[in-house]
Image 1: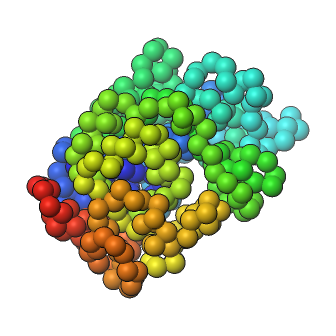
Image 2 (image 1 turned 120 degrees about the vertical axis):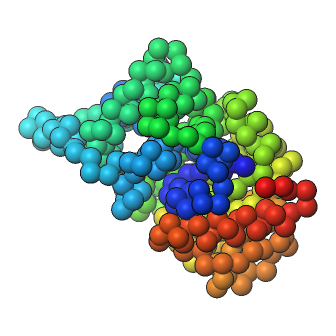
Image 3 (image 1 turned 90 degrees about the horizontal axis):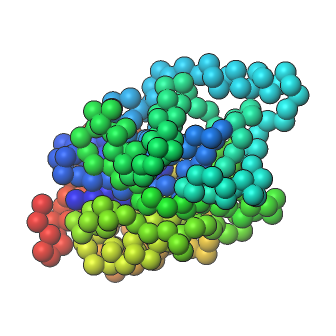
Length: 333
């Protein structure tokens, strides 16, 4: 089977799913719309969260970065900027530089001066290795496989595309990359719309399309900026229409578990709720909802406690996913 992953929702589900699904037979397709190039190296947050999770290195307090990582380089960058009187915060490269050089980094290039995103020292080594492999001519898929091998990860982890797709949030203050809007601005600027720049030209890789031939699980990730970049690619969306799909709602009726999903769904014309998620995912065949979620859907539903604070919680939700898949005609697990 194949999991679609972005943010922290699906990784939290994966943390307990190994007791239910063999990780060697469970592919993860990860969102890359949130990727940025920071100081010349490519940072792939949603890919790395799964790599670090399966490699036993993820900081599970933040669900970001490597547990116990140091930050000497990050702190030194800020000290240098302060000493030189350089302004901090997100510092985009010029429009010309956004489309020059490494193609996969288009529309998401930032300077490393007083870098706005916290990057640990061991974490930075991952990004430098990835970028080095890209510069040697390897694809993002190949670079991800190499990092997985280095971390001892058995589960196949695939970026959604080897082409650039940038998640851009349009606000009254101008267009902001999702990482600026969420990390640097705390998701505070009002959202006018969300754009997945590059999605019209991007395609899923052959490996991703093959993975989508298996039953698919969408964890409780943000439907707009975690799953939306994948769905913005026509071939990806079409593939989901022809395979069994189960989704775990990131809402309990109209209450979101965490993150900016509610705000982003409302801004993009969707009802911020389980009902709105179902409308956003017309290709989903069955849903896993929280026991307290009374939303009446037009598709099969399995209910359980969908809060995932521990691995035991995640295993409970994974077993509900298994039941939902088993109930779908023709699905054999």
